[in-house]
Image (cartoon, rainbow, N blue to C red):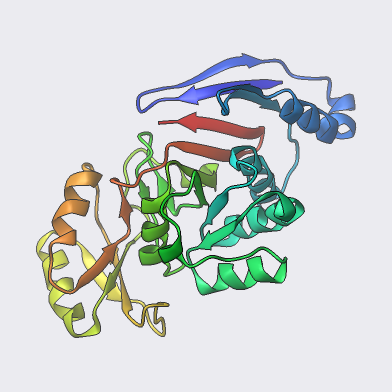
Length: 275
C-alpha cells in the first residue's frame, strides 16, 4: 500500500510501501481505494494523507481517479471553480453527484460550462462572485514547485481569471505532466491578432520559436501562439516579463497563480503534492 503526504518544492517523501500478493491485487484494488478515501485524515478541512492501490489502470481511468479525488476539496454549500480539459471533464462528471450540495460553479470555458449545465449544475457569472474556496483544473506541465504551463485547450485567460478568484488551486494531472523544469510543452500565449507577428519576434530573440495555432480562436476572440524551445527556469520572472508586452492577453505560465495542491495520477494510485 502507498501512503503519501505533502510534497514540498524540494522533495517528495514516500512514507510507506508494502506490496500485496499479486493474487489478491486485482480483486481488492477498488475496495482499497474506497477504504483509503474514507480514512482520509482532516484537520480544519485540510486533507493530510490518503492511501490507495490502483493496478493496471488506463490513462482515462487515472484521470477519473484524480477527478474523483478532487471532490475531497469541495466544500459543501460553496461555489466551485472549474477548469477545462480532459481530466477536468472527469471532475465535472464526479461533481454532478454532489450538485445538490454546492451553490454552483464558476467555469473557465464554454465547453466546461456546457458540461456543467448538462448535469444540472448552476454556472455563475464570475462578476457575481468575490471569492471561491477552491479552483480545480489540470495542467499541461507542472514543476516541483507547483508552477504550471497551461493553455493547451486555449482557455488560459479565463482559467487565470478563475484561479485569481480562488483561495486554493488544486491541480489534477497524470504523472507525465510532472517535469523538473517547465518548457518541453510549448508555451501557449493568447495574443491580440494584430500583435501576433511582433510577439513572435520577441520570443525569437529569447531563443523561442513561436507558431500560430492554426484554426484556433479563443473564447475571447483572440489567437494563440505556441512557443517551442524554451527552458523556463524562473517561471515567475518570465511570466512577469511577457505580461508587459503589448498585445499579450495572457501567457500560459501559472507562477503567480501556481498550484497549492496537485493530485497526481500514477500507476500505483493518486499521489498528493503540496506546495
